[in-house]
Length: 198
Image (cartoon, rainbow, N blue to C red; front, top):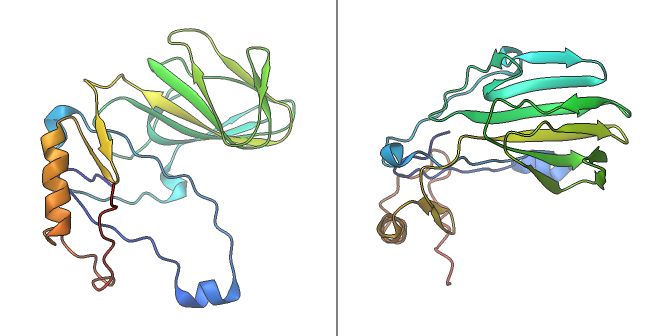
């Protein structure tokens, strides 16, 4: 999804699923748009798992979700070079982090990995030095996300769900949200989350 100049979306679990109980594991990541595209129209695209490049290495299965990595390109649209790869590692597996992108990090979803002589567990983001060779080793079976890409074209401001390079855009978005100028979500038109008081 590209939020662009503004989009409201809803993430709901149907009541019948909540009633019987379920577990969901997910990781939601947002990438700042380049300044020249911040006011573009919102967009959405869906790519089934089988359309995403899968790479098999000894003890590792990689899935390129966005942009490019390890010589493969995902079908997802991106506006800047992006690194976004899911890696499932068996215990003892070693993975060299693709060095194509200037900024790189590894997020440990679950399991335990080692990098540069240190061990990292779940819910840890390991920020890697630019342009240096980096390798991780799975101490246990592990799921990690490789994230990064090109540096931003300037600072961004964040307030609640609004991100922009210009604070005035955020103030306008706050006013638009409060005054109901964001389009309603189809099938969820009646619920409204007010701006936080901060």
